[in-house]
Every structure is written in C-alpha cells, then in structure tokens.
Length: 430
Ligand code: GDP
Ligand code: IMO
Ligand code: MG
Image (cartoon, rainbow, N blue to C red; front, top):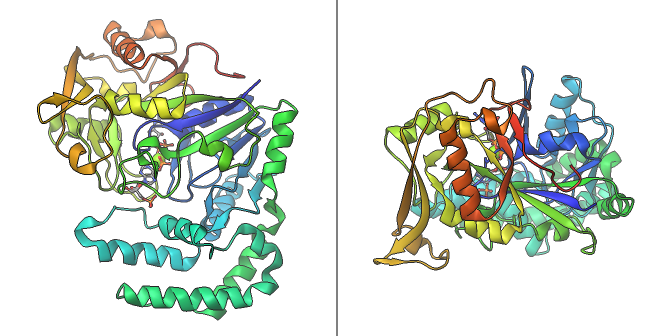
C-alpha cells in the first residue's frame, strides 16, 4: 500500500488543494514537504471556502494528521494566524506537527525578499514576497533558524545578534534599512516558541512509523513543477525542489517505502509572476480563461497570466514527476470556446525541439506547434458526475491529453467543490 504524492505539473494553481482534499477522505496523514506561505491552496465544499497556505489541505478530514515536514519554510506568524482562522471556523486541528528541522521564515526574510526584487528592477522574479528565497538561502548558508530552535529559545541570543548584524549589512547594501532589531526579534522568537512548541517534533520518525504501519500517507506538493529550482524555468522559479524526489528529502521518509504519484494538470495554463510562457494569450480567449476561471492569485491577489494547455511542458513535468495518472482540473472553464488549441511541441529557429529547453532566452523565442480541437458549449459545472455525462468534444479533449501524455485522467474536476469531481479508476490506496 504505497504512499501517494500529489504534484502540480504546470506553474502552480492547478487545483492541488481541491484534489488533495478530495482524496484525503481515505488518508491518515497529509504532509507538506516543501515551500511555505507562498503557496495558496483552495478547498471548497458546500458554501465553505478555505485557503491553505502552510497547513496541509487534507486536515478538514477529522482522521487526518497534518504534518509540515523538514523541507518546508515555516512562517510562524502566518501559520499561527492560519491555525486560528481554522479554529475560529470550528476546525480545531488536534493532530498537527511541525518538523524540528523545518526552517523558519524570519521577519527580515520578507523584507529582504522585497529589497532584492526592487534591486533587480527589470530582472525581478515577481515573487510572492513571502521571504521564501531569503529563507532557503540562509538554510544553504547554514545561518537559518529552525523550528527546533524554538524549543531552546533562551540560548538563541548570540545567534540573533549575529543574524541582525549580518542582515543589516545586507539590507543596507541593497539600499534598504532593516526594520528589525535584536530585542524585537528575540521577543518574536519567545512568542513563537510559546505558541508552536507543542507541535514541534521529529516528523520524519512519525511519517516512517505511519508508513511502516501501512497507514495512508499523502504528500501534498506545493507550487507546480515548472517552478522547481533545478528543473523549472530558472531564474523564474521558486526556491525549493518541487519534483517528487523531494518528498523523500523534504520529509525524511525512508526511500524503501513505495510512493505512487498523481500529477495535477489544469485544462489550460496559468502563470503568476515573471518568466517565459510560450502559450500565453493576450486576446479575448485569455480574458475568457481569466474571468471564467477566476484566475486571481490565492496568496497575492495578483491576476494570473492565462494561455492554452502546453503539453510539451507537461510531458517534461510528467517525466520528472513519475506520475502514473493525472487529475485534470477546470475543464468547465473551457465551455464556450469554439476551437481549443493545445501546444504539442515547440519550434525554435525553424526546428522542432527534441527536449524541453533550459534556457529562458530560448523559451522566450519558441513558437508553439498547436493542435486544434473542437470546443463545446455545454456548461459542465452542474449535473456532470460521470464520464458519460461529459459532452463528446470534452471526452475527445481529455482522450487527446491522455494519449499524448500516456497516462489516464483518473480524477476529472469540473468545478470548485468536492461534488464536481468525476472518479475514473483507483489511485494507490484510494
Ligand atoms: P492550487 O494552488 O493548485 O491548490 O490551486 P489554487 O487553489 O491556487 O487555484 C485553483 C482555483 O481553481 C481555486 O479557486 C479552486 O477553488 C478552483 N478550482 C479547482 N478545481 C476547479 C475546477 O475544476 N473548476 C473550477 N471552475 N474551479 C476549480
Ligand atoms: P501554489 O501552491 C503560483 C511563483 C511566484 C513567482 C515565483 C517565485 O498556489 O501553486 P516565491 O515567492 O516562491 O519566491 O516566488 O514563483 N509562485 C507561485 N505561482 N502558485 C504558487 O503556489 C506559487 N508559489 C510561488 O509567483 O513567480
Ligand atoms: Mg495556488
């Protein structure tokens, strides 16, 4: 009974939150293993909407233990407010843990994120300004604060002094001034320690224990694979690995436990922030996707850029993810588009590319090769529960994607809520 990883196959916002919540009714544990409050995962059922940033999306199911594992960047202030919002809405999470090895997003990380972006000017990444890059930089530089430090907060004085001196110097080199001093920072750490210590533990041990007992463990990827720091469109990426392999590194799960993978693919493409986007649409179809798909960033409120589905990129992401099935989302948004295009390849300097390129310069100059399919007028968000309820053109669209990628769409989403989901076959333990 392998564990299951849920991985986004595009540039984020594929509907990972919805799919994670949907499959979590059979889960015992849902783990976030990378990213932080830069993620924004939406879950809807009935008339309720939840926006998860750090807490795993599966926790609305009573049986589920939520874990923020070591590969995450934990923003304590945001996490405390997320837990409070859930509690205020009647969801007091009883089983919740934070890895003692997870790095903390400090207040200066958020400020430095903004300063670095301003300093880069036209070369800015368009980050969420949640301090993610600076936090992971400090992790690699071995000067970060970890959740485990909050268990021994009295001994942190010298490290706080050093960090503040170092960050002051860096901020001033970026033409800024650090807004935090050592005393304020120490007070923050004490406040975080009081609030979060009960949750902090060795989560790798917990995850391995559950996996050994054949409990159902789900790994919820944050972001989309095309934003992976190694395999995405560097430098227009986030600062962690999104590839499935990081579910092991980012959680400490014994690699001998089998992990099966489902990729989440939106029926069209979106991207927030800067970076190449070969199938981007700036016409009325792009407008249709943005409006009908309500494509506004869950974390930053920025409008998402929209475009046709890019199967050349998705094939690349799929092979990196190891997914053997996909969840195809937001098909309902395509209703009303006469002819739908899907990119199947890229041309560069007149030649078809054999592999997805690493160079942003190349990606900015490729011409997508499109396949055009007939669209459908029917709305899909009501009365569609089975494969056979879908219009024939929608089924053709899905089959084309399945044949191109060589995997089956085992979950098909035609609306925001849990009920608007078609099940087609078994997934791992589900
Ligand atoms: P995530 O970051 O991958 O979890 O995705 P987000 O939550 O940021 O963005 C996806 C948005 O689409 C959310 O508002 C979801 O409620 C919504 N959504 C998910 N699946 C569907 C679907 O099949 N149809 C429609 N119309 N909306 C969906
Ligand atoms: P979910 O989990 C979409 C993008 C940012 C920016 C780049 C780097 O909702 O899919 P960062 O703040 O991480 O340093 O920003 O990555 N980005 C996302 N885009 N959805 C996300 O998360 C994202 N998380 C980061 O817009 O371009
Ligand atoms: Mg999102």
